[in-house]
Length: 111
Length: 117
Image 1 (cartoon, chains in turn blue, orange):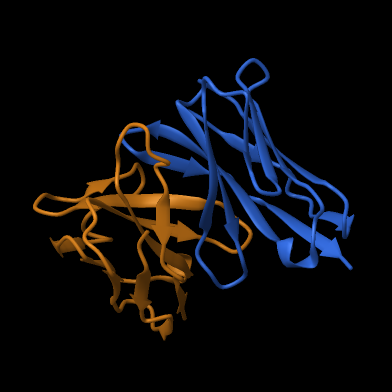
Image 2: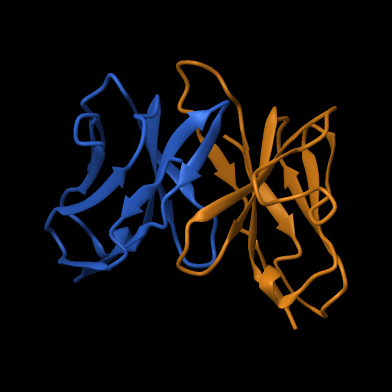
């Protein structure tokens, strides 16, 4: 079955730097991959979707790449700010509008 | 977009009892989902709730333990039955509209934090 691997260790970076988070999957390449942000005590909030035939997608300071050969997506936040501190979840399509979620990576941006 | 509310936000329950969690969406949606999330863990899909049909349960989850209702396009309930401490978790409701070309975005409620003693 499909498994998602996200770095369980928290990522600590300095304000203004680029944060890069990794999502690896183990099985078939999904039709699309999503990234969500989750703050403590809240439900996830959708950020970006990238399809299997897209290499890169951008939205403001966010950039997502999708490499179906490596079975990997990278999520970048440029010019990071303390307000970007949160847990970021990778989610994969499994068909029928259902998705499976990774455990997420916690990002801490220090001022 | 959709705004989702859940009730209760948290509860502490005794072993053997049942709790019903309500999920209200501010607009009509086709699909609603129920997830469970342990602290620091990924979201695990319990079931998909579609209006007018039985909920579809994922492997490891059964209707007798987690009965779900979906009486209309804006509301769903999840009941956690005959609770044990292993059911302690955060339960999240989400909603979305399928469709090719869309973002397949799911909108999530704030979650219900359940503790079973």
